[in-house]
Image (cartoon, rainbow, N blue to C red; front, side, top):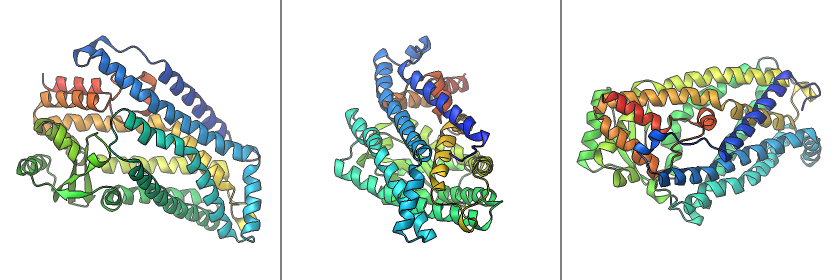
Length: 407
């Protein structure tokens, strides 16, 4: 921690600790399911969904506590300063080489710390519950590709951070927020088109019924759809989904092959309508605007914490990167309720407008029931966990919304 920690540190740390304890408590001692749940689901389905989510939630909170605790220890114990001294000797006092070497070592440590949790959550647990269709070699291939991509992008971010702080010592936070917001905008458009093909195969839909259904919905929503693509999601999971991708007015609708195989046509139509509603209601743009506003606040708070560079030649020393990582780890965790509040609102609006496009609330109800059962969604999530971490309304809430629309 800085010699004179800004009060914001204490606030962030206290909020993170309180939220982590509440999350852990709610995971171990969830509330009783409401009686109305049994209109749609069985007791066995509710128990299975809770058992499945228990493992994932414990892994999530365990990973957060371990990584945040490790970064806090690096700072408080002086190990970050010791590592920096070793790195400077190794790089012969070359500033940029020291920055990249220090970043690389910390990145590798965090990767190693998170690996058991990632393996458990994304491979072992998914196999245990029958969701993963991926072999161990394929999982490692995806993991290494993701890690390499993260290393390149994070390394670029580190260089940009130190360059900005060195050139604009008092306004670096503003330039950092703007640059990060621009990256989020670019990523939202390019990631599905550029990165997703590294992990999955996409082929044009050949079923005339599917293509005609998509274009008919697109006409109602006022959206131009250039392509209807099928993704080989079944090579990795049994779970189903769909999403939009594309730049400008050129848009693609991507359907998981699992969705087409395992769900009836009216439910597939409801899924597509929901994704179209996101675009027609401008949720992508709204999300980016909210993200930009949030970035300005978060980066200014980081400036309050770090201040202006006072190190050699007016630049932050490499060890400051640990403080930056700790700050964003804690802020991202503590800020979950705010982000997810807006996300749930947009998802609920997408559900409402999807019903306008399909005019079929019964199919929407069946879809929510089927998705919840097949994906083992928690049918009665603990209230704190729903408020803290749910990006979508819970299944029962979405069912009620569809039923109200049909009355």
